[in-house]
Amino acid sequence: MPKIVFLPDDNICPEGAVVDVEPGKSICEVALDQGIEIEHACEQSCACTTCHVYIREGFDSLDEADELEEDYLDKAWGVDPDSRLSCQAVVGNEDLVVEIPKYTINMVSEKH
Image (cartoon, rainbow, N blue to C red; front, side, top):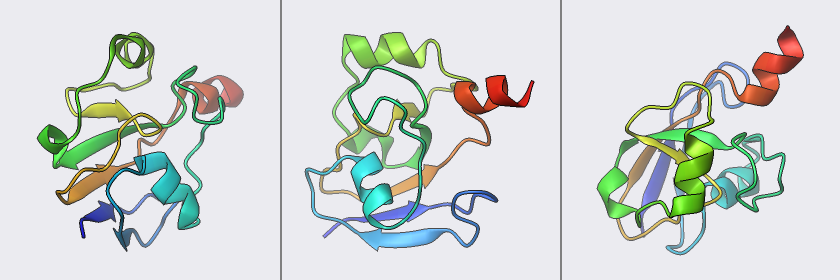
């Protein structure tokens, strides 16, 4: 059974977490099931960028992002080559290391 390592995040997951996961679930689903409150303004329908995460290990084990996800990632805050929308990144058979960004577009706009 693969594991997801959620790296520590000061606001959402201060201690980090290591979670056993059944393949076929999205990273967002797994996080929410574990009480890790990843923002997900569109309720996981691939209609925003608030659940953006960095896949620091295991990126290549995920299915490629489709065109819609890529379009939204183009709008995400702080996107890098390891970025995915956690609602669209479905766990396969390999372990993952996930970093939650410090900000989302929602959080940045709310603070200014």
